[in-house]
Figure 1 (tube, one colour):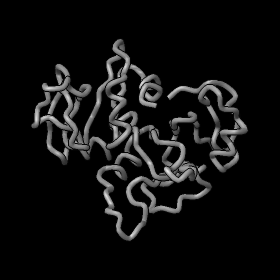
Figure 2 (figure 1 turned 90 degrees about the vertical axis):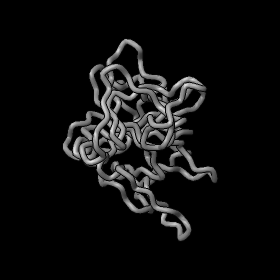
Figure 3 (figure 1 turned 60 degrees about the vertical axis):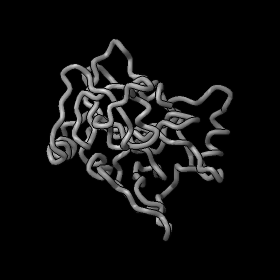
Length: 210
């Protein structure tokens, strides 16, 4: 999934990678493209994960994972970081999710369970502030339920904010007519994907890019 997301990030893009699976995208960005990674704790020009034994305890991403800083990278105040996120200065954000609806609603901060610890972080700011919102997630829960739903049942992060969904089974675009299938993993048919997803799907007319 990380490789597939990375392939769609264009030259010169300013990108925020959310906590969890999306952080893996940093390790798969094309070497021939200059892409600027931003982290909400105050980094711009973030690089891939450091080699084992070369971690800097003072250099971490928003998920508290060790990262590297590329030449020309910068540190700044948390408030300035959120001003970037809220002010429309990020081209793309890649977020994890508990649920995504067919209309692009996003739920990724709380399951609503009584014992769950809510952790919205900067997700709401990114969902409305980034020019393009992509979701990277497993297609189904551990119990086999689709994370793509007709309507989100968990507390919302953003309404109609998701443009593209990357899962372990497919790549789907949110369109005014519904979810359009851009790609499917080898060995899985459109009909099988639709059954696993649990909502009607559309066949994309032509390959689309992020």
